[in-house]
Length: 355
Ligand SMILES: NC(=O)c1ccc[n+]([C@@H]2O[C@H](COP(=O)([O-])OP(=O)(O)OC[C@H]3O[C@@H](n4cnc5c(N)ncnc54)[C@H](O)[C@@H]3O)[C@@H](O)[C@H]2O)c1
Image 1 (tube, rainbow, N blue to C red):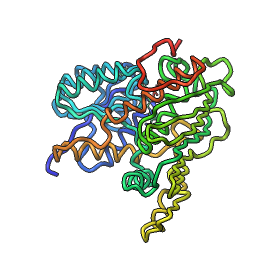
Image 2: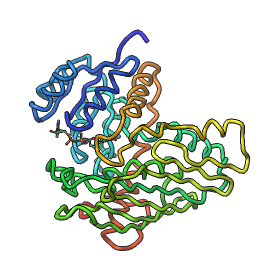
Image 3: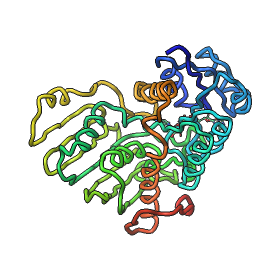
């Protein structure tokens, strides 16, 4: 690669250093600077990493070296920077969830398509080697008929996590466990088992008094493939244990715990299976006990993919349009919990779920 790809970051909060480190460690990526509506936050991060603190998004977009904009603002504030960056001809990587509604997601996809720029999303758990092995097995039919796709996320976040910043305790900002932390694992189910047909959810708050958010969810999914899914999500279960993703088919079972392959059994045992059983790093933190309790390696794979996609003229591997069905499932879960009945997809937005 002869030229570097310049990145600008919007939002200098908790996740921003993960983006900075990931870009720094990539081959061909270079951080140009960061912008935050809090000048102080932007200045602090910029000084720490030796990059420029932009005074506005316009200033960042005026810098021709910035080819990709990473959007790391709170969940309900992704649209404006994404659309502005796209209109300025910049490729975009947004944090998850892409937005808090299907309409805003479509608007962003449309803006990026119209501008002819790539639009990817940090649902970085997809790039884990164990997940990729499961995806290949699904695609090659090794599981046979898919029967179950389940996610168990029994995590812990202390009360202070929710009171530390205004948006972290507001429903419409996307701070409930379903759309915040759970998004990654519902995304894995959607990625592996396909689109959902029907969902049913119960949502409660069992561990964070005075916070008007769900911190505990039990849900049932029915996929179009015919598979069933059980989803348990919580941030109330101290000290928090690694996520478990289970895929069962008529001919095989795979279970990932954290990022490691816990179970990998197929009726047609193959020579490569023994190696697949060793995938993952058991000591790598994956977020069970704290928001910053993660590595940046998975983010780096997403960044590297963008750099390589630009260099070779191809699409990114996680375009936002592939994440839209995840958002639809998540929004359907909220609608189901509110209406206290199963909800059939496709759905339209119902902003009253955030009331
Ligand atoms: N992929 C992951 O594993 C992961 C992990 C944590 C957070 N996230 C996501 O990253 C995003 C940010 O989360 P966070 O925990 O860093 O939040 P945060 O509150 O720590 O940081 C957000 C920052 O955005 C700034 N901001 C708000 N509006 C802005 C605007 N219009 N322009 C510029 N800056 C603005 C805030 O001042 C703040 O500094 C969220 O979408 C969240 O879901 C993803």
